[in-house]
Image 1 (cartoon, rainbow, N blue to C red):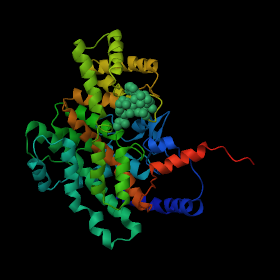
Image 2: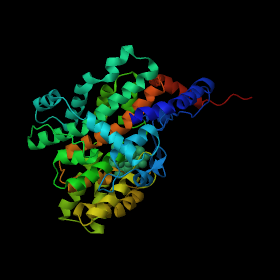
Image 3: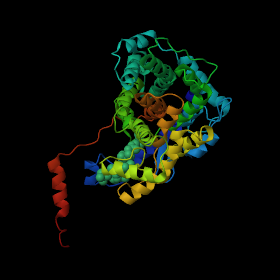
Image 4: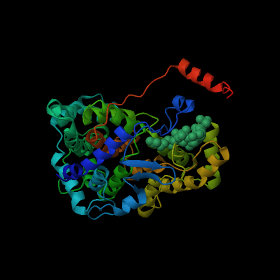
Length: 441
Ligand code: HAX
């Protein structure tokens, strides 16, 4: 299988690099850590290692060296579409090279072979109370699949240096099944259907998802699904979902256990729920003014939001200092396909007005839009209007990045993660010591 061959070929040199860092340079100091970082959620502490993606304050997320515009240009496209094959992105994340069309299609073919979901998973989902959150269902389904984990089954007979092979098998099996599970949850939860979605091997990942979701414009939605999954796939290792996968995986929990945990983190309101908040805010504006407001009305509405103690959702970012290229890519998608849609016009006006308001307020370090300022609007346009489902879509995309990281973490033999804790008293002692005058020399 192509991913296996390519990783195996690269492994010796990666292992050499890792060995050299660990054995010859282990004492080199990388950074210092402040009290503010410790009490501030470990913010920006440079302590994680990944080669799959990197968030650059000026260029946004860089996937294996490619910023988003370049990524979208270079990856091979789906047949009859302008958006890349998701299989091509997975190849890039795993291997670090832009695939040919054939290589991207090989990954797609692997997914098609592995997409069958056992019946008991659907039965379990169906038996859950109706009001269960779709992210809970999604995470449960992933956990329910854990008994098929190759990694878990082979664990006792495998040597450490082949863990990655079982991890790769699990990652391909898992990512193949996610669109089927998500589409089932969608049709069951909101439309009361109980039919098992069928993956069609003649269609790519994006088109399969669009067809199984049964949206009206399948071709358009397949393009959006491709873009959406690609843009949400990875975001370094420090955000909650990526870090959870990394941490749980470091205990050698298999990819199903680790990804289910990552989904539970993604389900938190401070992480994956932001896109629905943004769309909600836009719809509030639209409802209040009976359509797209004037610039002045929007300016006042934005200030009212801030003055009532709320943030303007979709704006600001912990790392980025420019408009998020993921926002720009989605806005370009919308403007090319449905520029006259009210919510798209409104989102565009928000892009014009809100940064100015945030600058006047003077708090946000980055007054520009992030990915969530527009992603819900695009789903809404295609008729996927059940806000609480949006995080499930994010989860399908995120699986691509975190499983690639998982495979490489096992391939390079990364150890169990174990940062050190201090007590509050210890931290206060450090502060008191730092405040003492330096002894005269
Ligand atoms: N509206 C109002 N105030 C904002 C703001 C916004 N959009 N963005 C930042 N600020 C405020 C912060 O609340 C903070 O105020 P306090 O000093 O009173 O606490 C101040 O500006 C400094 O914040 P920052 O350093 O610029 O930003 P943070 O790294 O602390 O936070 C956030 C980054 C994305 C959480 C923040 O910008 C925010 O709350 N934005 C709105 C919500 C949002 O869009 N979330 C989605 C983020 C994308 C994502 O990761 N999705 O998974």
